[in-house]
Image 1 (tube, rainbow, N blue to C red):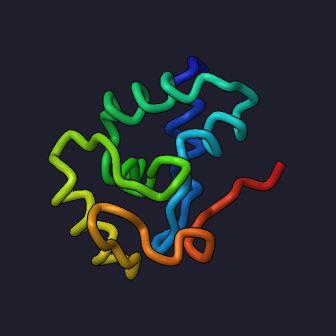
Image 2 (cartoon, one colour):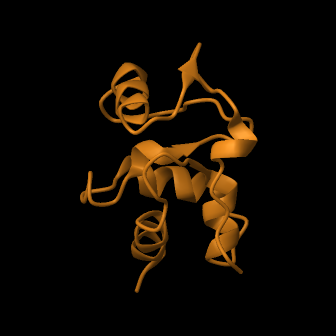
Length: 100
């Protein structure tokens, strides 16, 4: 399994109503290649099965999304995640951390 496939497989574990970070995804597969995680999300051919819209930066800000940040925010709100000014509200409460 290549790097992107490992990232996509891990991303599928993020439940509705939660977000994770590029850093958390990287840690979950044993790397510090956070930017490579972003590239994997950017090239995700399996959306919405692989919910790349649930990946935010380490401070809860919405970052790059193929369909634009408005769509990313809309998808997250639909799942119950509160977004204000392109940032996740109650970030620590909705942050999903992978079991190590």
